[in-house]
Length: 288
Image 1 (cartoon, rainbow, N blue to C red):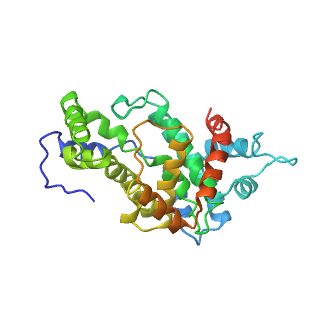
Image 2 (image 1 turned 30 degrees about the vertical axis):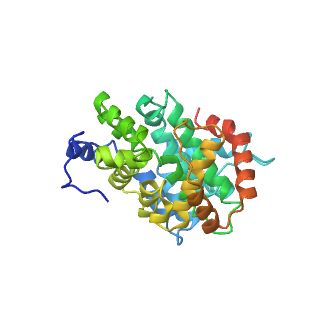
Image 3 (image 1 turned 180 degrees about the vertical axis):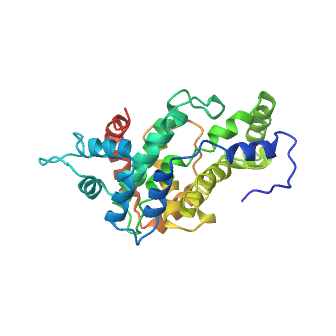
């Protein structure tokens, strides 16, 4: 994924990779849930059994299932009923989100995000993936929602190495028209934020489908998988509804290929954006 022998005059690449590989891990229960969601053979009973070992997560999931947005006339009193109502993909995203919320809420002005901005964008992307799954003819794997939530996690490490002189090199690469944002990162830093995020996901022992979705969320054609394409489109949904920065770049040919690959019409994409915009505040409140 990343060349360890490639020299970098701009940043301490080995140190950056080491930091990415030593981020505070996710709880073992959450990592196990991620692996189970990515495995089509997992039953709800097996999934619920893991949740039962985490009393805090159990309480939060029951609360989510009984929230105004999710609840029906009959209250949910068991984790199994909560998972049946919400779906394993949504439950996994919620479990991961409760663990990474504090980190994703920090400001990273190097990437154009004030405090809370990256968290807002991440939630919008996860919601976008969830909603798009209802419009795509191609099946969107349930772990995709979590991949979308984590797609920019690499920025939290990469920003530590963007000293003023490095930022100046990136700006020059962009202003001179030599590269887009992702290619500028590659040119100046020898790697981009997706690759750093992939290292973090590997360190957290997350399934390879999540790792690949994070690495290739700007370049889905390099992975050719429904999950990666859906994350790419979910990221675009977030930007379309204003939950992002003004640095987002649009490659219409790539976008059209992703739509076609997922069996999604432009009208379906617009409808998903509209629904995501209407539901985003509700999703943000899940974590308050």
